[in-house]
Image 1 (cartoon, rainbow, N blue to C red):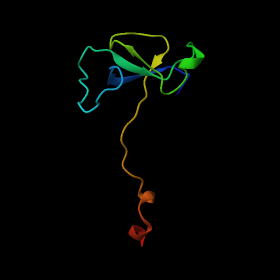
Image 2 (tube, rainbow, N blue to C red):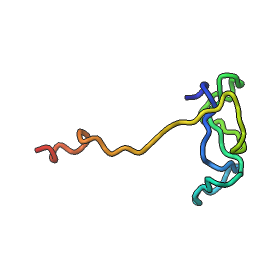
Image 3 (cartoon, helix red, strand yellow):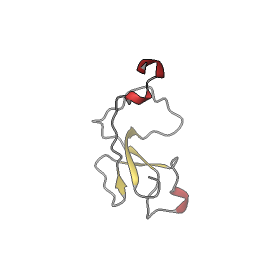
Amino acid sequence: MVGNVWEWTSTVYRPYPYQGERPEDLGSREPRVLRGGAWGGAQEELRVSERVRLMPAGRLTDLGFRCARDVSPCPLSLPLEVWR
């Protein structure tokens, strides 16, 4: 997705290094991490490790998010012994 839109994440922005042990407070008004750079940005921003911050209510024309969900394992990925 690098170079298409900035990817909005639920991660609260903190300067590196930080401990990611505590769960994120999704209701907090702290800035969130944007990753990856976008089509209108500088060439050096177009990398997955690029991160900037934006307030949760912030808006950009080149900001998006990735839809993801957990899936159960495919039955075909089970060991061969299970199928015998």
